[in-house]
Image 1 (tube, rainbow, N blue to C red):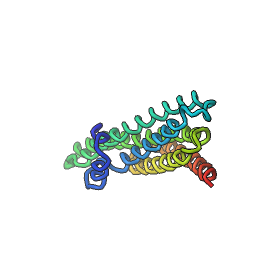
Image 2 (image 1 turned 90 degrees about the horizontal axis):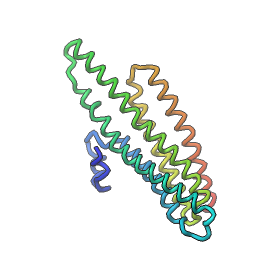
Image 3 (image 1 turned 135 degrees about the vertical axis):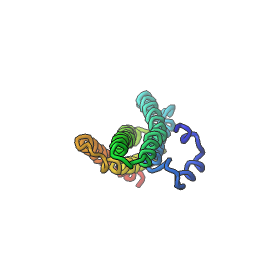
Image 4 (image 1 turned 30 degrees about the vertical axis):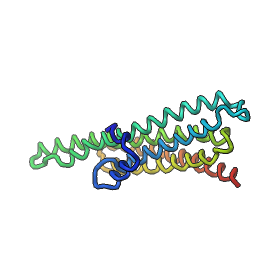
Length: 210
């Protein structure tokens, strides 16, 4: 499914708007997260080499490398989300005429549902890490690019919210209660912390623009 991120923006959005199973909400969430991380990298790029920000030159270089890594990890999750959804889509079409077929279909579906819930959860984790970087970019990066840090925070928050919905839609069908409860608690915690941080970054950036 790596081919998804090789498509043009126009091709990707056209497929997204079609009835094709992938890309879907999960892939869009991962892409939004990657854009948020890329905006952090942009702030770093516009800060590095400027005499005014010499004191944070080394730190900014490290932050830029971290943002680039997260950007690529989130892009990879566009394909990963499609990869884990494909077997789930096939599982829905498995025969269920006999008790044995029903049992096998249920077994496969439960395994696929778990995998499909973990990919967007990973997106949420990566977006949370991105927001920690964006907080630093907004505080220490070039004032000329502070709005980009705020945009990155807004996109990262939206990506987390979108990813969370993709976690939830799979969790509701998982019969392993312990697994579902653990993932639910983890996801809610990630969303709560990430949303609060994103809102704080956004507010701080907005205040700097007044």
